Length: 409
Image (cartoon, rainbow, N blue to C red; front, side, top):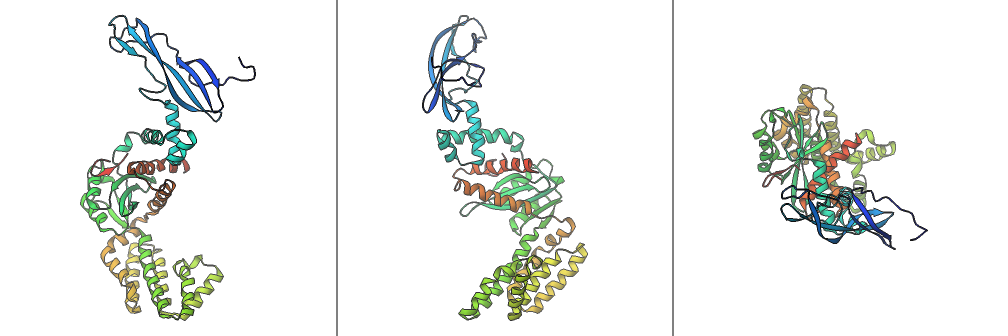
């Protein structure tokens, strides 16, 4: 026996080590279960005798950065009562499995935050094993309750891109800051299926969303008691787009030498006035003084931003009428879309001043989804992407499919 080695605990007290040796790249350990007797699964009798045995190679977690290969003696017993032959239970690895449960749990935990290919390469296992381990661990962490649709007092709706021209919709709890469900597509039919099976739809008081008509139709149909609030970010973005159209029009009318002035300062036009430095304010003032039409457009944009600071809905309604009049007087055709926006979504936009709810959490969650997709260079298995989105709820908590319809793992 070598006199220059030390023993390291395997951490599996159920197994008895028969032979162990350390090779260059891995540990090889021959083991068998400590139990001397086992109950017959057919008759329950305890009078059994060993019938035969075979040896199987099993993978376990690394030890001292080396792979661990467990060679398990799989014993078969014969019951002396019913004379049936059976294989002893395998709690450490599981039936017909060639890896230990703790290895699969470890692989699943790593795969939540890293790509499948990276985990497989670093651990020296197959990608299919990592995928199965991730699915098993995700289901364990999400639990049975995650499979049921849930309602909340303040909900948020927003779509995200699964892959090119394919979208899903997230339903979020804006107060608890977590995803409640994921609906296939961004149409109203599947969203209605989700809302129809909510256990307590009457508790939904507010639903924040962008100006997507199918969302509004689904909420009005299934949650008539809920108040729809259009996210102010999308309203301001529409006005910013109108401002940028004015800039690009003026830029196209300028000579080649002066186009750069408008192009280089395009970001200053869209930023908040109070966030600009003194140097940036000077640049913006110079630009607006040379383009009166652009000055009007920028003033309309800033007026709308200040409008969102109204103290009450009544004050906001009066200020909105004045703002719309200023658009008509300005003669800026690019802002006509803003007028139609307020005409078609007026009540839902004004509801903000009653509830002061935004979809900021949902937009942030969509950015997190983009990071998850980039990490794996996209997902062929859409179910795994959805599971990762639900698992990201656990990250937030730490820091502060139903077929044909919705998915809520």
